[in-house]
Length: 201
Image (tube, rainbow, N blue to C red):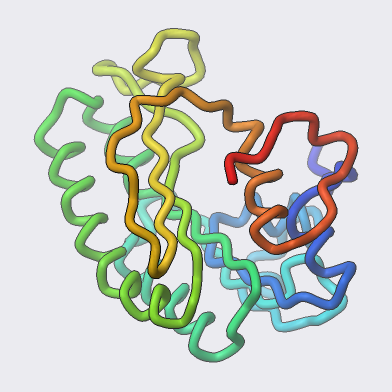
């Protein structure tokens, strides 16, 4: 079954108070927050204030180039100056599932993705954006995710704020349930009661 999410979320909270939202992301996000099922022609590019993701650029193929996605995200920032932007590349996931985590292809893709993110990172920080980088899952040497072992459950989280010196590797373990409340707090928006985890900031 494919249907839009009915749960409170960052896009809904931001759009409800007149904030501008945007995403450069896999088409699942369009289905979750805008329209379901995804129409690959009509829904590929949207600019509609009535939608939860008001300015969306969505792709459908796992091998869609991350470098193109980061450039698209940069365009959304320059053109619309969103209060909240989600960027969701699939390159690491695709490389991991194809070659496994213990492969040169996976490691090299991480290095390339870091370089591509750097193309837009400085500009975004100069524009006052807070940047949170993480993953929804890891991957094991066999190209598998979805289990309970550390390599598929534990992912890095980078929190970059303009003008604030970072703490480096804190070796702190936090829950992914804290990500949405953290974003809402940074946007100075009310945290829904359904989000029970404490924000990080």
